Length: 257
View 1 (cartoon, rainbow, N blue to C red):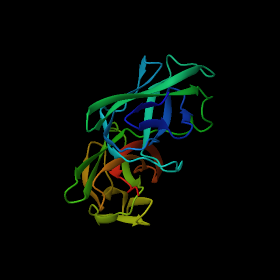
View 2: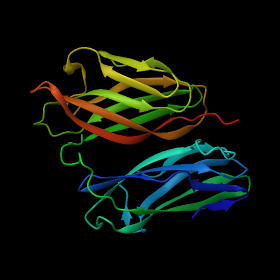
View 3: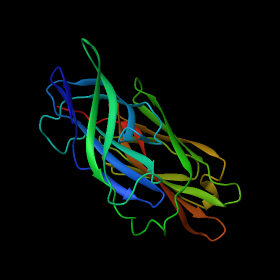
View 4: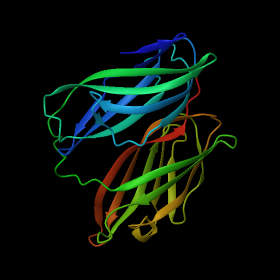
């Protein structure tokens, strides 16, 4: 159910993508402002299923300013990935994914909620074959300088010889890679993605328990929006690709005309 105030309408701009991993459910949501005015300081305060099963996504999630999409359905203001435990959910069950938040206008702060019907899908065919990486990506944003600086923490068990060796970031506006950690190389089309990868031995990656800084992009954008990232790893013992991680992080926001 979209919410509107002062010609601002925050809606789910496409059907959510659902991935049942067996023990967890991943819900990928996309939002747009289908109104006539900019929703300033758009902030997500909670994502839940039926207002009782909360997402593990850290809140609040600050999106930034969301200008009107002007009817262009492909123009997304935010993409969010939320994870829920499957312990109280059942395959085939029908629920509501509920997203709540606030935005600012000249007359004050307004609350909104978006309700999206979902049906719990069967376990994804590769869910039992894929092991997910315990890792965290964080970002520091200097909007004055137009700089987004990312860091990766490897939170796997100390007994596992897992090195994070690839960090792929989806972007929605032109960017320039300004820095990469030592031993890493960046590949990018400067418009839709940046992929950092270890250019030498896996030991240049992020080992268990480590925090690696130095993944930096610059943009002329003065606000941020949530986009999807992925991490992949190599098992030092076997030399083969190992666990992966998926999530959402703030990136430079696209400009709207």
